[in-house]
Length: 172
Image 1 (cartoon, rainbow, N blue to C red):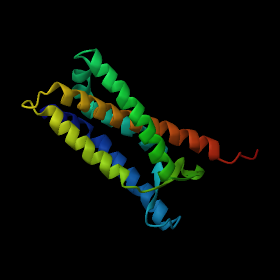
Image 2: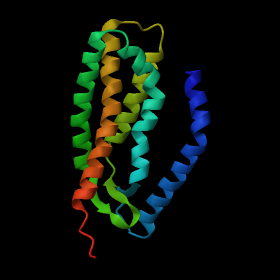
Image 3: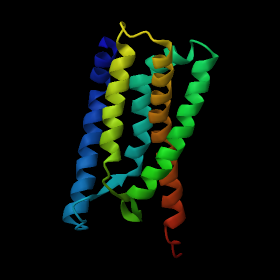
Image 4: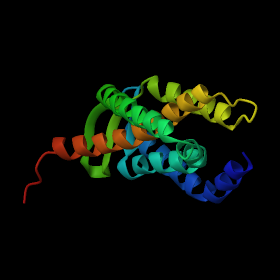
């Protein structure tokens, strides 16, 4: 847990910059584009950092789980498959349209972000609890961690794919 705080301290300047750019993008959506309340502008370069931060914060726990045995790798594979389907679902319900002038996308809020965040906190808390050493529970934690990380990475890849696919051709 103390390593998380140290990592957070080292990354806090980058996190602060990200928050500022995210707030500016959301403000642009509200004040310039007059987006409905549940829609917001998301910069693509910020979206790329989502899975990176998730790996940084849960990577140690995830690596400990994966280095145990073969069955944890199988559980991780199940997590990646679940992450793929969750990412497709989230992208489908969130997607509104690309925003070429800002290299961004317009997305719609869904409850899935909050569910994923609560799930991440629960899984991380349970995984760091040394009194909780049930083998089956550790397999479920591995599934959960890889679901979260893979969902984030796959969702970003799908966003980029849709962004490039739906952009109108530039006139020369």
